[in-house]
Image (cartoon, rainbow, N blue to C red):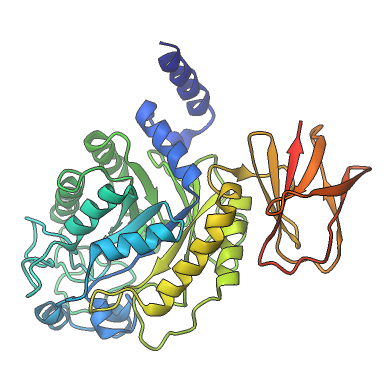
Length: 434
C-alpha cells in the first residue's frame, strides 16, 4: 500500500511542471524511465542493406540510387556470420546495459519479419532468418534491454510522402499517400511491440525530413499513444532535434552532449526527461569500409564519463558488417571500455550529474551521499572543487586504492591535494558528503 501511495505522489509531482510528460504516466513508465536513466550506457547498431555497399546508411539518397535497383541488394544479402549470442555477449561485457537496433532505416528495408511488406530480411533475402527475433531472444536471455530504432521516412515506399531527402530514388509520386503510409508504420510498430517480447524504447528518427514543410502533421500523439497502449512501460524517444514533444519519455541529443551544439543538431533546451546522447565509434553510423578512423578508448571513455557528468546516457554506435560480424576494431573498443567499466562502473551506473559542475579538468557524478570527481585532464597535483548549496565534504578517497587524500577548506569549496599529477584515463576521487 505504501509503495502504491509513493508512486502516486511521484506521479503527481513529476507530471505537474512538464507539459512534455503527456498523459501516459503510470508506475510502469516512471519505473522504466528510472531504469533507463540509471543504465547510462547503451550500444547503437545501424544495420541494413546499406552495409553491403559499405559506404554508410545514406548511400541511397546521397547517390540518387533508383529504389527498384537498390532493392535488388536484398537478393544477395546473406549475413552468414551473424550470431546474436556473440553480439549480445560482447556488448554486455563492455558494460553497456541496453542495445538499440535499427528495425527499419530510411532505406525502407525491414530487418525483421513483417506481414505488411515483402521487403524484409525473411521474405526478400536468401538468409530467411528474422535477425531481430534472434537478437531480441538473446537480449532477454542475457538481461540486456532492447530498444528499437524506427524511421519515420522511407526512400523506397511509393506511399511515403517526399521530404527533403530521398528525392532522387525514382519513386513516382512526391505526394505519396499519407493515410496508407501512416497505417503501414503503425501496423509495423504493433508487430514490433507484440512479437518480440518486452521492448525498452522506440527510438524514432526522420521528423526533420519535413522541416521545410512546417504544416506537415506526423500524427505523433496517436502513434505515441499506440506504443504506450501496447507496452505501457515502453519509452518513446524522437531524434527530432527539438525540445521534447508531448508523449515522449527521452530527450535525444545527436553527436553532442546536452548543452553543447558542436555538430549543429543539438541546440534545443534541456528538459527534465531522461537524457541520451548518441555518437559514432568511428565517423559513420552504418558500415563504411573506408572509415577506419575509430576513436581511441580514452576518447570514448571520456565521452561516456562526460555524458554521465551531464546526467545523460551515452548510446555508442557500431555499424555491423554485411557478413553479420561486428568490426574487429569495434569489438576491441568494447573490450577496452568493459575493462574500465569493471573497475569504475560504480561511479557511472545509477548516478546523476554531480554537485560540482563540469569544468575543463573533468566532471562529477553523484549518488547516495557520495560525489565521484572524474579528473580527465589536469596538469597539477592540486585541484579546487567549488561547492554550493551547503554541501560539506567529510573526507576524500582515491577511488581505486581507497587511500585518504588531503582536503583543505577554502572560500566557496575545497582544495583537493592529489598524491601525484594524474596520468590515468580518468582519475576518480570519491568524496563523502553530508
